[in-house]
Amino acid sequence: MKNYLLFATLLFYCSLFSSYLTQDEIDTFYKEGFFVKRNALTEKDLGLIDQKSSLLLDRILSELDKEIYPFSDHDQKIYIEGAQIVFAKEQGKPPSIRRFVGCESLEPDFQKVLSSKKMKETFFALLNTDAIEQLVSQYHPKSSR
Image 1 (tube, helix red, strand yellow):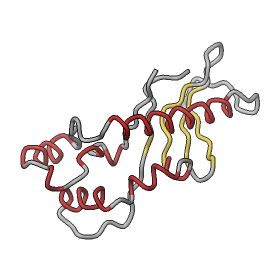
Image 2: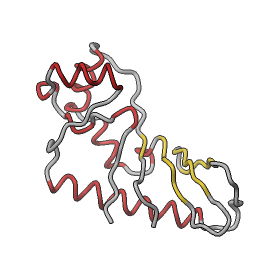
Image 3: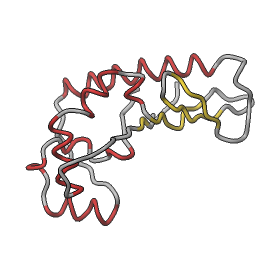
């Protein structure tokens, strides 16, 4: 099963170039807080994202299987290599990852995408600025195991 990335502050990830943005997309972003730009990534790009996110998901789920993480009915947080992992580990169920905050610290290829000129220009256009201090990425897996 494929895993796809959603960057909470970067839901418009696929919009790559500011010239790709229509006024309707910008208006939707300001009204809804996000928009989706379809078919902006190549199949090769999607394959790389899927491969890297699957490996990352497997790595984190293996960590959460350890007995040092208690069962709970509430979401829990741990930190691995600078990334915050929010997960659920309920009795009788496998661990479930809710999100990773700062996933680029776990996967360098994500950082390359986030710091690319294309990405920055898209944010500059959306936010009507020429400077962004920090971009925080989140990974939201759509399935566990």
